[in-house]
Each structure stands twice: as structure tokens, then as C-alpha cells.
Length: 211
Image (cartoon, rainbow, N blue to C red; front, side, top):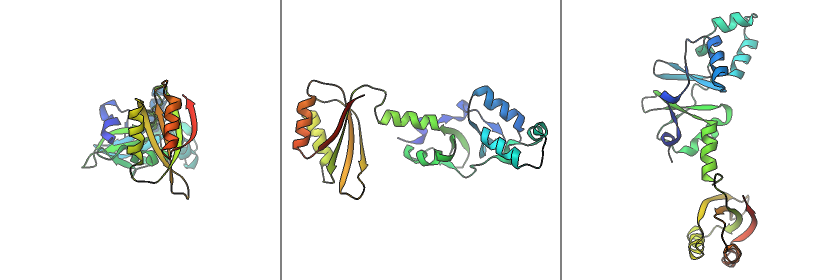
């Protein structure tokens, strides 16, 4: 999956220009009930402004009158995350770490023109989908040694028991030649036999939960 598949386009994005004053920016944040907005200069992205950024900038400013500060300071003057962007053709996973310190990530094209955003909410939605959280089922966590063909073996067992796999994720086990696997399947009458077959084939079942 690529960024372009999950991004909000510029037409769907709430943004401000670099010369928009902070009083207008603050009102926009309140009105739209959002944490931050991208700041644009022409076609280029120059950073983001958030509630927290505005407050911090005011307290660090030499202007003691709050209204004067908000009326005279532009969004471009305090924008941050100026160099944090993602290409629309990047794989979606790259957005996860980029969103650690900001509520949104700017998406740019090959010419570095601003074309949209990915928000933390968008990222969470996609990871919820990847883990099958929107569909009820049985979540099975198990461990398996790092051997060639283990996923193919797992898929063959699931197929033999006519199990419908909703999601499948793997994780590293620290300092061991082992992978943790979390699989979510639709609830069925074959569960007990399926679990037995997994363990017979070297998959150590750690947890089973209906979610």
C-alpha cells in the first residue's frame, strides 16, 4: 500500500498560507476541531502550526500582549516540521515514525509541491484495518522458529480447515531465532482441531481470544 492510497488530497485538506495571521489560524483550528494545519507558500509546504506551537511561540516571544502577538505574527513565522514530508509514492509504513512528533505529515509530489496530508487518524485507521480490528473473529497468537516456508505451511493448514484469515502479522522475538505471529480468523466450529494441527506443525500457541 502506498501513501497516495490513504492521503487526503489538497482539496480535502484544511490549510493556511504562510502570511495568515495566528489569530485566524487559531480560530480555524477551533472551528474545525483539529490539532494542526499545514502552512503553504505558493505550491510549497513550509511547515505546520498547532495549538501547542502557537502557545509556545507566544511564551517565547518578546511581545507580552497576547492579542498583539496573534494579530501581528504569521503562521509561516512559527511553522515547524518544515523538512518532514513524505512522497506520495512512498510505502505507507514510512508514515508511522514520521507522525511521532506531529498530528499530520505533508505529502509532496516529485517536484516537492504540496498535494495533501496524512494524519495520525489516517494512520491509525490503516493499522486497524491491517490488524483486522473492524471485523469480529478469533485472535490467535503463537510463536514459530525462523524456518523457510513457515507462512506457506501455516496457509496450507488454514486452507485444509477452511479457515478464513482476516489478518496476519509477524513480530520479532528478542534475542531468539523465533517469530511471533498474530492471526485473526473468522469464528468457526473447527477451532479446536485447527489449534491442535498448528501445534503439531511446530507453531506454539500463546494466546487465543475472541475479539
